[in-house]
Image 1: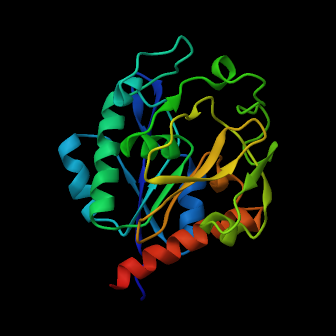
Image 2: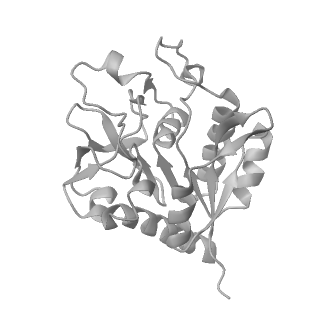
Image 3: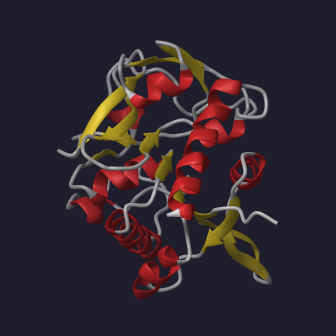
Length: 243
């Protein structure tokens, strides 16, 4: 039987009650990875020093959504509207990015993930879009997460444009933070009408490296353009797998 490439997916935190709490990853991530031929495994944020060992078990890394990135990670004080943060998760994932890049693994960063890779590479974040960005559109939708709610314009000749095949796409939106100062090694390849950065690519990375601000994993079941993002990511992981 042909083995599937192992896709490590970072995890958030959920508390049900004092008897039920722990790491959490929305099932749309692992369902979509499995649908496209990958073997999803969940990476818990346990200890910073375990990050490299976890990455060694993977053929690609998917940085998932979740809590706000603690502003101390990019040398800022907290905004009044800053949401819940977990500094340990931030530190573990920063190390995961470092270890994955050292091994030249495919990296797909979604929602919080795009923000985390920007911070990992030296960028900063808008801590609360409605408070900071004048005339911003609604980026935190209240309808089902699988529904699209706004347009995103995609840069021509980008990897993202080659995958989705269109200059503008409809996306869902579940965030109140976004990239502010873009890390030097990243190129902006998609924006919303209010100028919020919706996608980035690494300028020099020799493998798949894509950051997306929306949640394509929750649209992939009904939108082939969004599914192609995962198909290309897993395809890159398969190439890594057979080397």
